[in-house]
Structure formats: C-alpha cells, structure tokens
Image (tube, rainbow, N blue to C red):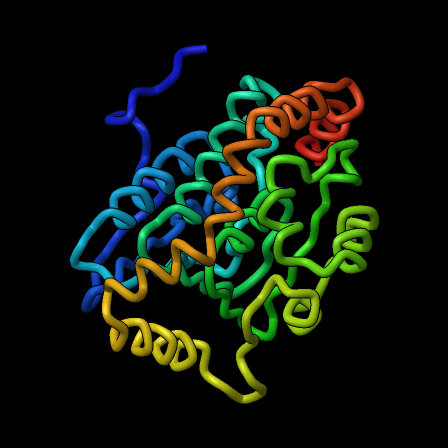
Length: 255
C-alpha cells in the first residue's frame, strides 16, 4: 500500500489564532474525526508548533462537527501497522501534555475509545450537557492500552474499573464526577460563553506563570508516557491485529 505524502493528505485539522489562543479544530466529518494516521499526524504537528509559540497563552482543541472523536479509524486498522499507529497516538498525547501553555478541550458531543486519550491529556475540559464518553475497546476484543496513561491519571480507581471493563456510555455529568471533565455547561447555559470565560482567564495570566504551572501539572504524565508508551503501543498493536479484533472490525464495517 502506497502511503500518501504530507502534501497529498487532505486537511483534517485546522488552526486559527484568536488573541493569544491557538484554536485547533478536528475537521474530518467523513469518519467522525476518527484517529486516522493523517489526522493524528496533523494534530500532533499543530499542537507541537502551537505549544512552542511564545506569543500564545493557551490552546483550544475542538471539533467542527457534533462528534468530537470516534476513536481509532477501524477501516484503517485493518490495513496498517497498528503498533506504529499506537506510537503515533502516544506521541499525540505527549504533545498535548508537553505543550508549554495550557490546553483546553471543548467537547460538544460523543467521544469514544482513543478520543478519550486526547480529552484526558488536556489540562481543562469543558463539555456540553449532551456530550458522552465510552471506552468501547473491550467490546471489540481490545483494551484501552495506549490511552491508559492519561485516562487512568484522571479517573478515580472505581470509575476506571467501571469504564474500562463495561464499555458503557457515560454522561458528561458523570464524567465530571469521575475526574475526566472539568465542568459541564450548566442547564440553560452557553458553552461558548463558558469556554470564552476560561480563555479570558488564561489571557489574564502571565505567560511565564502559565508555562511553569503547566510544566508542574503535566510532569508526571509526560514521564509516564515516555516510560510506558512503547510497551503500551506493542500491546495495543497485538490486540488490534488479533483474529478476534479483526473479525469485529469486519462485521462493524459491513453494517
């Protein structure tokens, strides 16, 4: 299979800057912002570049459509090296954690499987009331391996066991109680206004203070990803390439 060069890839991630905030938007509606190799590569590049931009006070991650992220691209998972793909997702999570400035994640709708790794790696998460979350890997013969470092770092132990083992769908309100989400849009509230309020607070901070506070907060996550990332990518790849998982993918895509 020929791999497209960067110049041949469609644009799946868009960056615009708004008063010292880099707004990075997932824009792959055809597959509900699934974590294809192209999207992961583009998102990592944007976050890495923005994270080093000395004019910025923060990064806002959001999606262009109702679905924030559907998880790994299952069609692609049947044809590519999923160990390499897993390393790419680990690198993406590390880029969020290692960005010099705070990363705010806006979640307007569903987040599934690998998408929770993006959410958990962010520093602040604001969700719409209709947003929901699910670690669906176990139902496909997988385990939430490559995202386990940031996700386990956010969830309470009991919530983690529940989410990882049942694969059930969790509401935004429950996600706040479990530790994944910072706050949910209040009843009758305005998510735009809530996000703008957080970004206004970040703009009010001195960049020096933001950078040092972010570094302290994320140091453990960065260290854990560096220490365990390769092993988790190997485990993930073995499970993705298993007969059990590949059978699930084929049945899912034949629907």
